[in-house]
Image (cartoon, rainbow over all chains, first blue to last red; front, side):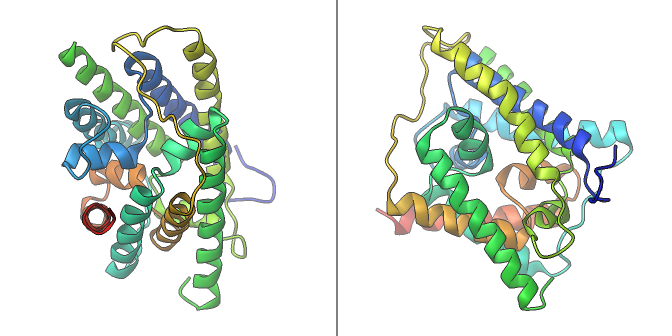
Length: 147
Length: 138
């Protein structure tokens, strides 16, 4: 389905994928009693963080992510991705994402999906901050001619 | 209990990763296009967020009526509601990295199956950033 005015947007795929992400987070909450926060689970799985979910739970969830993507990619005959051609955006972006998610206790999944749906003021605040920061950063990249 | 929990977590991760791939969020360029208000803005990410809110909002209502989770002894949820400089600065730093790379932790890890080399590069840097926090802060 096309969204008028936005030729590149995929509203139905976005909605369908979002429902799956929400379902996954709901399973983590209702079955395991935990927040599906990917940054926290990644830190736990790699041993960078000592607290939180049992390590086997964290590792299993993290392994599941690429398996799910692989399944969809196989079924659809590929999933389109365009990565930055220079390594620098990946390295600098990765460093900031890693540090920032630990300092701010979460990312899009933990604060954005799980926290906001719980109406947690802390998560709503964090999501507003990282959204604003993301908008400002990309605007600066555009002004600087890097986009 | 541990085996059952691990299996449930694997299934949840798989559904999450599949959702990222279906929604277009595995594509850093699409995510960056959502953040690019002055370019060819792509609102897809807003639909993903909206879609994810629906099951989760229901899950929180159900959770309030449950004494314990289905496959664990108790709910282990963040209790704090403190809004402090740490939260603000962390979120701002995360947002900057998200904008620069077009990737946050979930899509980056899911992308190991789709574009392994750049995904691994981002993840290595992300883990380094997490380690810096671990050893530099407190």
